[in-house]
Length: 206
Image (cartoon, rainbow, N blue to C red; front, side):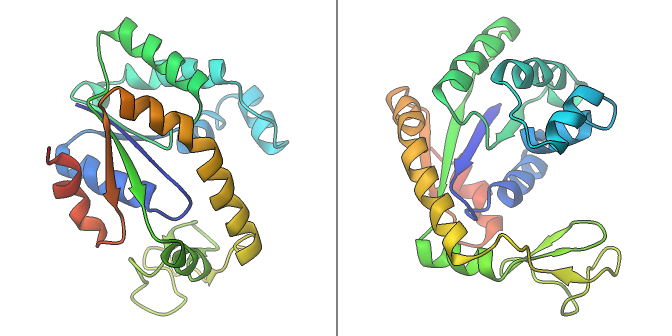
């Protein structure tokens, strides 16, 4: 069972991918998290990330190949936010062909722009451990992390101006990806305005 989760800013890709992976008993793979984990032991990747350099599609695909060979991916996995370009789609298709596997469903998460703005502008992260909080998952105590007790802070880049630019960029860049998967009969659009727990029923129904 292989799912791809895609969607614009603040449509809840990470949260819903995590819920879905636990419900289905399959791995949740975020390429961003994967790169940060690899950077702990790989100096080249560490330097590229610290300098804000792009990681090539080929490097990501090689790292993904290693990740998908791990035991927790045998039953299936969810790719969170990847692929994002047609080139990545083709590289992923080739990788899965080599493994004798294929994508079962691509889920596009959508939400009204006003809700996206509200989610982003009201979200906070723990200054110590990085855990995120927002309108779907508020902390038990205002401005205090449930896990480590750290202070919750607002990201400096979470502004209306930067958010609008990110939304516009996603809408522009995602069209050919969504068209590709729609034409392949794999695309399912899910409204992420609902409570995150509803993703399991929405994503798995035909």
